[in-house]
Image (tube, rainbow, N blue to C red; front, side):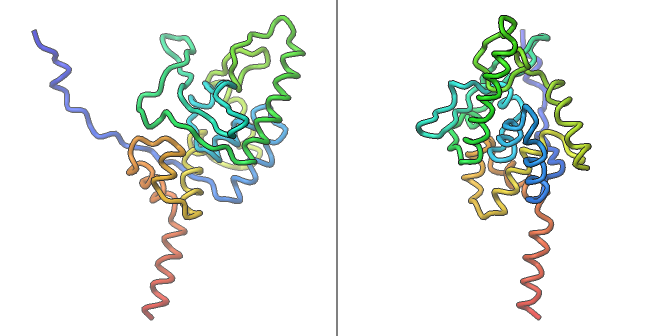
Length: 219
């Protein structure tokens, strides 16, 4: 007997980096989503670079209000047709992230909004401790998130996927001069090469500025 799966040559994974948002576009999305019930989710995606499954699987007990930190240790995924909380596939994905004031504010407002929805739902509310839920407390699937994002991006004229918000966080942090290894820790990349590949794809303007400065020094 032998395991034929061991004979398979697994190709190196490729990462589709998509389109990152500029600072102006990110500000616009945050401002225009202010009245959306998932506003805090967009803030966490753009500031902390969290994955979709990580956001949808985020629980209130992962938020430490005193230390202003957030523990990312599970994700919501569809397994055998059911939405389940699962552990991340890599150790790097399990991380503790500091919460800047903008994120603290968004989460505080979201908790108040959720309390109002819980009261409105009454006995129909299904408590599971999740931060981002339906209007009756049940887990949100990817389709629910898509129905929220698509009207928003159409209104703003932005051709983006949800995953592009994560890529935007990486690029914007590196544009600020944050060291790549710190960015990798924040977003939970398993390899710093992934962090830099996303940035290399999205930083054409920065490359242009650098080459212009070099050209001016040499001329």
